[in-house]
Structure formats: C-alpha cells, structure tokens
Length: 232
Image (cartoon, rainbow, N blue to C red; front, side, top):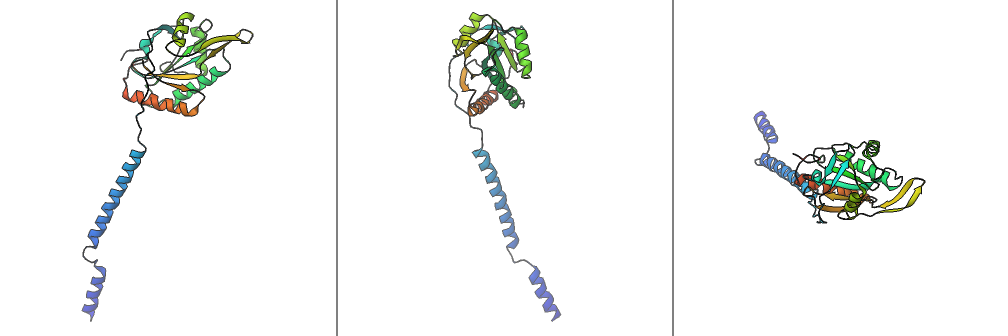
C-alpha cells in the first residue's frame, strides 16, 4: 500500500507530457507578441519625412553681423537656417519674435538639433548698428555660434527682404517720438543648406512653429554639417 501511495504521489507531482512544451510555446508567443507591439508602436510613431516646397533661392548678398563681421549667403550653406525680421526699437511684435527664436534655440540644443541656425535681419538698418544688435541679442541669450543678427546698407537690406525673402518692410509714421513704426512680417522662413527657401511659418501660430522645428530638424538630419559662416 505504501508503494502504491508513493507511486500516486509521484504521478501527481509529475506534469503530464507536453505541459512543459506548451509553457515554452506560450512564452515564445508572448515574446513575439511583445516584439510585434513594440515594432507596431515604432511604426505608428515614426518620424514621417515632410515634403517641403521650393519657394525660391536666397541670392548673393553682403551684410554684416552683430560683431561687425562680413556675413554673406555662404554662411547659410550646409545647414538649415531659420530667418526672421526685427528691429531693436520695436516694442510690439519684435520682442515676441525674439522670444520665440530663443525658445527654438533652447529646444534644439540636442546633437540632432544643434545644426539648425537662426538669423534675425533688422528692418531698421540705419539705427541698428552692430553694437545695438549685440545688446538686443544679449536680452534673449542669443548664442553667436547659432544665432546671428544682420544689418547693412538700407538699400541692400530692403532689396533682400522685400525681394527674394518675400517680406514687407514699410515705415508707417512713428509709434512714439523718435521711434519709427516699421510694418514688417512676423513670419519665419526656413532655408535649407542649398540656399533654397523651403517654408514660411506664421510666428503667431504655435502649431506652425512646431511644424517649423520639425521641418528644420528634418533638413538638419538629411543635409550637410558645415559650421555657421561656412567652412567644414
């Protein structure tokens, strides 16, 4: 009887044939299901390459930056550049544009975003000397290796801004004594490393600014890697 009981106990503790195999199979299926879920999530959230328009070329130009150094179209080559328009005496739209440019600068500090550069061109070049642009840039913690401010002869500035850069630049009286009311666009332009304008973005639209960052990152990822100002 004792031998029979021992035999029954052993049988009770011994899994039926195929039980271990089923557990292995279920575990494998679980791993496969998890892998498929991860791949599906990665596919659903993958970064989709945008199709950016060709809005014309940035032509040859010769201006100076906030350090008084020459700045030409070659400084834009090899990396994406975000261009906007400001003037230092402006107390309406320009501080907002500068703050949003600062935010873009801060959001793209990572290695993949650092290739994105920013350029602010004054629409009041007769007043905005390099030293005034330097002080303006300091207010917004502009990093010279990524964000430049341009000035130069008024006729050259006007021809560049109102021509290929597709932006208004009109004086409409004075907003207060000694301060001109210069009407200009609050839009941002995106230029690729081949000097082609690839987008225009309304700075008042937060969704457009997010789109600008996404598009600029795409160009940084697929373009060259030259230093700001040219060179390799």
